[in-house]
Image (cartoon, rainbow, N blue to C red; front, side, top):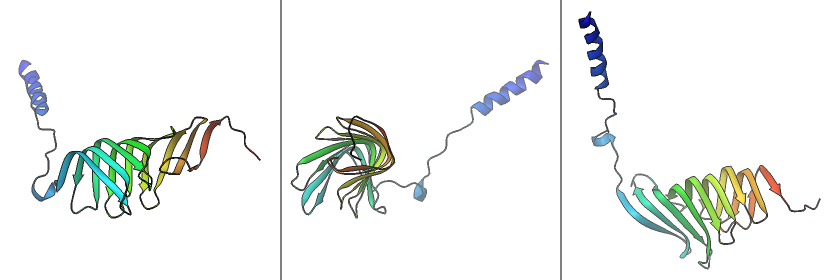
Length: 177
């Protein structure tokens, strides 16, 4: 009887020792970045003037892809056409498209304007040509007077002229009918 019990125990032990991790692809299957850096800064300009400074703890660039990927402590400062600071963005990751200088920020995105207005979302796009902040997802927008939620958002880089699509929330403001 002891012999029958030992065999299943040995089989369970051997199954537990089997290799369960996936092996990393090697050779042509695995792709390594052509450029990689840490504590990096990218300056985005328009007509020779600084419009955004992008700081990231880690940056990767693949030559066969038309974007730069950033992660680790992504922080972005936006500027107007006189290079005056407008707002500051933090996110987990960001991508800058090289052909347009458009930017996509993802993961716990927070934008704080110099006037104190704050935008929270999980993903947003900054359109370089139009200098507009855009989001198709859920947002929370906080001003001195209001806390608004919505799905869909568009604003200038200083969060002064904004549109919230599908808004909800509470305000103390009076509306003219």
